[in-house]
Length: 245
Ligand code: UDP
Image (cartoon, rainbow, N blue to C red):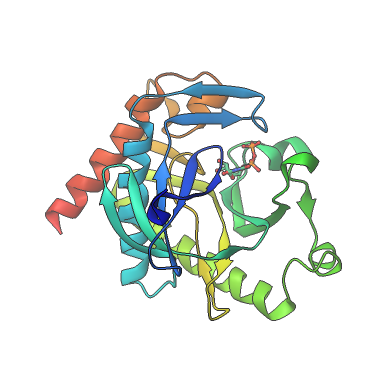
């Protein structure tokens, strides 16, 4: 088999293939969606193309703002070329507004604006159901060193500032999002994975009959309507905005 096509890893929403250059990989965005640790599954035709487009535009924006990332370029409508990284097994969630697990685990009302952005860390481990981590547990498990964790926090706050303003221009509220980081061949910590409505909550600021509309994976998690329609709306707003600037 051509080395270029060797499958390195297949995840729930993406497939990673090797490249002739050992420092690079290609990443294919799948149409599959999972929720509740893959207990709920569905395929949405066209999701891969939409997420590839959305994520590529967001990574371009982050790179313009000097965020170090794995992203190199889009190869075709549903795949990208990226730097090969060793993924740090921590899911980094930043929240601007309380929703989801934060409200299930505390008595904060859903929809509460947080005084300041909150960063939560989760252990990227499906067998354990991605449990919430503390800094001490992160060091106990040797997931990353203190300096690296500090760097991840700094980059995450910076990404939030860039994207909160960006989505506001698109009339969207960035409620929360999940990031993953990796180490490149020189050991530098860089943003990896994707940024798409699969991994963030985006609420339309144009309310429908006074009700907030989710334009993200909550549509699938909570059966709130057509997922492709919501993801297309995000993609269209981004493309229209980019077309104007
Ligand atoms: N998230 C994710 N992958 C996960 C868990 C959460 O991308 O395995 C994202 C989710 O889409 C949301 C944010 O992280 O944008 C916060 O999710 P939360 O902890 O509230 O969990 P949920 O309510 O989705 O169970």
